[in-house]
Length: 244
Image (cartoon, rainbow, N blue to C red; front, side):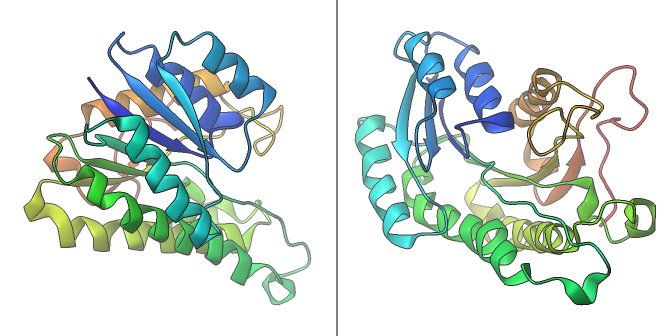
């Protein structure tokens, strides 16, 4: 049985990841974590035949994280956690120049420190597993090499925080590689979610499918990499590594 925890699962990409992960096999258990359970997530749980359960989790709150670990441990029922997908995050825009950016501390506290606290809190539940994959959902906007190509997107705090998340991913990858862990940062593409808007390239279903494929196929060679999704027919989603 595969056991999977997805944060930020009440809507958008996180919700669709829960839905698609739960449909992998009848033996899969997906734990959907979010600050609160949405009607859409309630519907997924109701139709999942016991393969999906909800755990409240606010990644910006250490007390909430600690409480969620105990709830997840109970749901696992003596099993190890195989896959952790850090999908929870925040995004905002700053217009008029980077000097006007006022939300950098908040973005870092959620997108980086929040992910760090989730990872280190759940590592003990993964120690006995054979898979041990930790996936951080990043963005191509985080690439410093390609920064000039995405100046049209006025979200500097988001870009900075996700670049820091990538750096966090690499540090974890190097620190835990000898213990069999695989840490991978994945850019899910531009999706038609509340964050991505209606003009985005891909449906959330297409993006989630590509992320699921990348997660399930990831091996030790992927450890510490920053990977693009692969969507056939899209030159911009070639499945290759994204330059830092």
